[in-house]
View: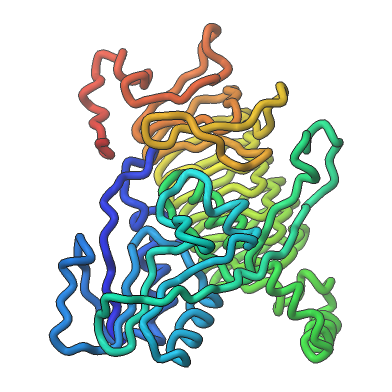
Length: 415
């Protein structure tokens, strides 16, 4: 089968890069898609428009936009059902799919309501392109998750503070919030949900229990739940619970607590850091006592001591200073909004942190309000007049522009 990739050249702020270049689960999105579809596809072409697809050989074809995030379970179900039908079809979702309606619809246009279904930008053709396609409804398998109980004033009038986690994930990445959703909700948490479902099989439960007994570890810390790469050093006092994946040549220091995370290769996580439901990219450095909760760090990023990041996304090659806190909850009961296009739109989440672009330098002891963004290449220094960031920070507001040698810090990620 060949795959045809339709390029989406829209840049996702504040990164100022197309979605395909952004990291999900510690891989560029284009590579994540390629790895998932490798068992099915033998060739690929890229086009800018659907109309540019040539169909000389009329061969089996999969067409999708390159800003889509989907996991292996979703691809397997869609392609197996589409092949069994033997007819041209398109990904669709029902109106009562809680994963799609809760987390995938806000801030995007790639999943559209047509009739009584939501249609997405992925098509399957068994014998080359056809004019008519049939909607193929995929059930994402919503799994309700609430990591902790909170007072009723925090959940407000929207009910309990819970997330709808897919067993088969699909998302159109068009905003930085989608990067958070793809990594934490549809990535790390979805893997945890699948693992929890698998424990209902006695053979799986027995296998994990037996391995934990042999290794003399708690069940969540045995090698079935925690995958560790080569040449990785883990201090005996560190606590690591799965499902967690740790890359090669990683150092994890004393007193570190890691729960349900992805840790990239060559990362250094030193004394007393706490990480939960997070993705830490390759070559990241956390010196000591930083806290990450449902946060994504792209590669080559540093988070200094006593920093606190919750529900955040930080781009590549960035620095977050000591004691800086990203808040995630509006004290005044108002809906969280972020910029989408040229206007503020609701994010559809009760709690959400902030987003830092690529190649940023964020100073120490700053407090960033929920859902705020800091554009790529920004240098932000705390002053007496500015210790709390209450609005989005654009490149033109970067502190380095007031320095005499401002030209030595060129803009790497233009709009």
